[in-house]
Length: 265
Image 1 (cartoon, rainbow, N blue to C red):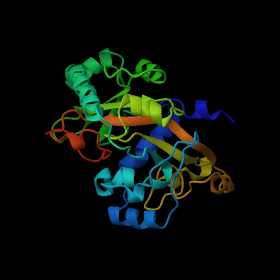
Image 2: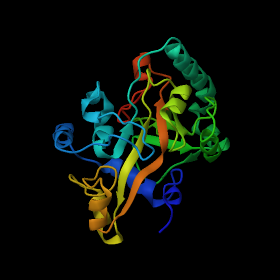
Image 3: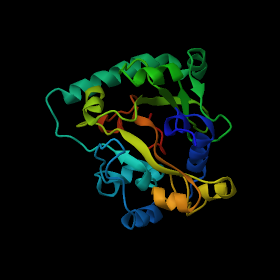
C-alpha cells in the first residue's frame, strides 16, 4: 500500500477528481443533511491531536452551505479562540494583501501564465480551484499572503472564471498555534478533510447518489467500517486550508466556509 502522504499529495490524481465530482453531483437537501448530522458521530480531534469543533453545534452552521454541511464526519474545523488585541487588524492586513495580489488574476489567463493550473478541468462545478504547486510547497513551512496555494473562480451565467478569492494551506500536522499565527483563530476557522474511505474498484458508484457510502460525503468514517467494505482508509487527506474572499463587503463573510454561493457583488 502507498503511504498516506503519497496517496493524499496535494490535489492530485483520482482522489480529488472523485471529491470534486461528488460535490458537483451532490443532491441531498440541507434538511436531509441536518437530520443525518444529528444521528452521526463527528470528528473531535485530528490525527495530530488538534481539537475539532463539532460542526452541528457551530454558530452559523446554516451559512456553511450544503456541500460543507454534508461533510460533518469528514471535517476537522478549528475551534474559535477568544479575540486578542490586534487579531482583527492582522486578519484585515492579510485580506488587503490578498486583494492587491490577485487583482491581475481577474484574467484567468494571467494565472495560468504564473504557474496556476486548473484542477479537474473536465468536471463542471460552480467553484474552480487553480492550484500553484510551488506555493503549496512553500506553505508547508511559511505563510506568504502574496502566494496563495489556490485561486478560486466562480462560474456565473456569463463568465466561467470569475475571480472570487484564494485558498491558503498549511501542512497537515500544523498546530493550532501555527495556524493562529497565520490567520487568527478568533477571526476565522481553518479546516481539514478527514476520515476518507476510498472505495474499492467494484464499488466506485457508491461515491455518489443521495446516500453515498464512500468518500467525503459517505456514511463510512471509521477505519473499521472502511476495512469491512474493502476500502482504503485515510485519516486525513490534503492539508489544512482556509478560504479568503476579499471582495465581500461584510468582513464577517470574508472567511466564509460556504463554497456553494458566489463571494462577490
